[in-house]
Length: 196
Image (cartoon, rainbow, N blue to C red; front, side, top):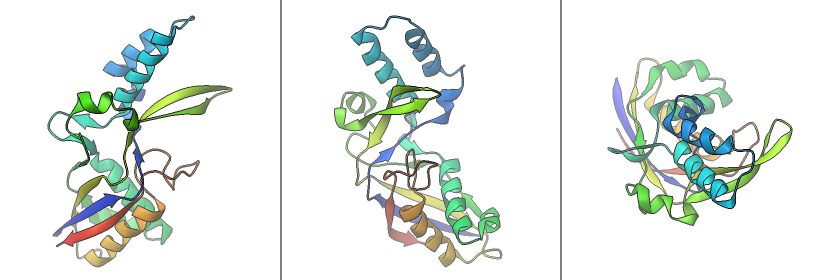
């Protein structure tokens, strides 16, 4: 087994969409339901819904700040490997930890929440209706370190680095990325340093 650390830098903004928010027992899902369930919404209700939705979709914990979960990184690498018909080899790669992101105010939840540049509002289809959705938008230039544990008996570590490089260009991270069902321009990155 070999440890590999891959430093990456975002070449595009990154949109977050935390799947935990789909859980009806999630704190933010409960708060959102209270407001979205109103039949007549005021402007203040729409602002509140946007604020709750932004927080619900942010990958955040008090220790790491803004981060990308390890399972999202593993899925991204596996997606890159499938493009080369080598997806089965992803069992030889363990993503060691969540990846904290560094950017302006990345550990200050209050400042981020009040920064309009940290939000992406867009119309999306929800069944037959079009609705507004708010996503956390991490600005281009974000940085992080992907920490991997690689089974060298099953895959060459240099090949793993190549898969991560390709993932940064054609798979991406987050919502509306190049490999999304509806491909987008977000979540792309470049590898800036590899430590083995």
